Image (cartoon, rainbow, N blue to C red; front, side, top):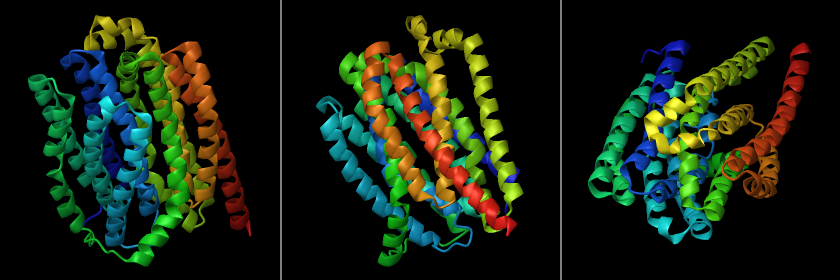
Length: 411
């Protein structure tokens, strides 16, 4: 099977991911437009936040590990089998978390959204196979199909029934058939039939466990801040905050698309002891991410209020000020994701865990103080402070690795 160039892989991944993120954001817009109250948007925001905890556990940070497994020490079938295991574990843990932290009125919608996200999580391991073999055109096409189908199904059913739960069911029904397409595409590149080798799966899960815990705590920073806002200020406040700040996530996603296809390249640089190439790729990624967020800041400062009025209507324009703190929060979130995945690719699972534990501990008191002082903006402020602390620790770990790498290269 012919491989695509790195540039082509980045373009396909960026297009598919951006379209998918745009449709996810459109869902949060349409739930405001089509539902009869802000509470529905608030419940969806809670379901999405809880599903992020599930995704962190079920994904198990295995994609970063998988695509940086340049010698394929673990087979594709073993990665697929491991994903079934992690989805089951993630579902159980997240349901317990949901019962302990969410209002009972949000239980059904949250469970259904977890089922929807489970399909995405499974497809992700197949996209890891595609990325390993430089065929991310399969990823881009899959994300485009799933995003279009789920958004259409959600909007149609919500308009007809005014039921959030039935609208999420429609997302499940319209996206699960795409799994067959992904299985067929990945099968052309490698044997993706599940291989349930207990020793390999346990070893893989234990190796990635510190990073999983770390990135789950990273996601918990956002989930806790949003849920705290909802519990103290009401679902309506959470719905407004989520609606205003979700468009910014598209910019954050663009930054993620810059580095995701390069994780295998970073691992290859280390494997080949190419210090100069590693530093060059690192600088380019950071510069590109900085450029994306500066462009986003300029665009929001000029067109932000107009954009909100166009998409959400005039009733949300007075809340446009939430975008600016949200943009800062989003930029720091993208940087944490990049350095976290880079530490995984470099097999520093312990560093990933330490950084995120510290950031999560900081977030608990900071969230309470910031939300009390700044209301909805306090969510962005608390996440930003927590992630800034996380970034400092991650940067120290990375600098330690680079120094050690440089010393080995000079010997």
